[in-house]
Length: 518
Image (cartoon, rainbow, N blue to C red; front, side, top):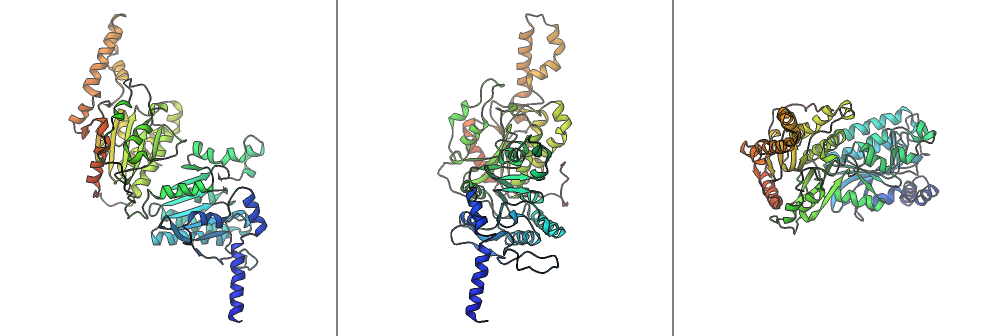
């Protein structure tokens, strides 16, 4: 064979590899409003920086040999490149090849990229669009998928992993996509199913459609799998870039610093007016968070799920921080099962990647009720407490208003070795609210008072209880608060503490890992 023939043959193979499942299928994907695998990679990666790997990997036939009749690449485009100047590994499933289903070589190809990302210690971005495991491959498909799942688990906590779900993803592929640190779904086409809609009785009977079973809005509000929902594929890429701007390359690296023109010593008189005088009146914790952080920038995650607690990324003094805050507008900011799980996982993610955690606390307690007790609020609430206590990154807490009972303990209190705990003068730290405590402790005195005097007696006892037990200065006197600060100084105080804690290192006796109450 001549050199010219070899070059022509190479070009033919390259053209076949880039054609995926054929031009007709690629065109059908475009007509549905979705991008092809290669188009998605081009949008994700800085222009001219993509290096493809395993272009000629092929489907393996039952006798163990590569079969030339298969599609080159076997339904997935994988490689490495730059995203906003940062090195990443990435892959995109090709729906034009067997519906993006995962055969043996398809899965092994992704597993190889995952392993390479871990060795290079750079982030991994996966674009998922495929219909589960390939039935034609039989057990070989499951074998390859098992290897992929193992690689993903080994990478967890070592490198940031982000999943973009831009089409229907079914079965074990959905499990793989959800093993990432952050899962983003496209609003129109992104779907995740454990069982195919074609096998789900409620879909077959017409009770629910496929979007209602596993669509983006469902996973954003009900299941808590989607941390963010993208309006279209360009929006999805922008979200990935924004998320990655808060994350380090790997767990031993420093999170990326971005200088801000927002002065570190900026005070804000607006904060003085944000908490109502009435302790039972709601307000929006997001307003407080945005007023404190750099340039008012806050990337909220899981905004539609367990919205009685707020989590997300922001910056203080140019440094990324993870924000956790009770939301008084929803359930008065009480902790329930979903809120505890949501915050606990975010705290562990921040801890894995050396991102300090700042907590804005206004919590009247754990949500009471049969549903919560039967659902295991004790175990799930313990996850939140465990996550805070286990975290070794700098931990800072601002008690804005209420900090009652077990919820006070679970929300990064000083007793969990939190590094810097302060309170506003509006804060109340107690076993329970003054009204409830007085009704229990002084019920006989209240009952003994005449009907005309009863309300006056009760009011005096409430004020006395607040003075003795609820006042933040009582906690400060015991060393359970480092200071009681003016709300306007919150940003300055937090940044000073973060600067001091930058060199924090924490030692604990060796163990394999803690046994979090999953």
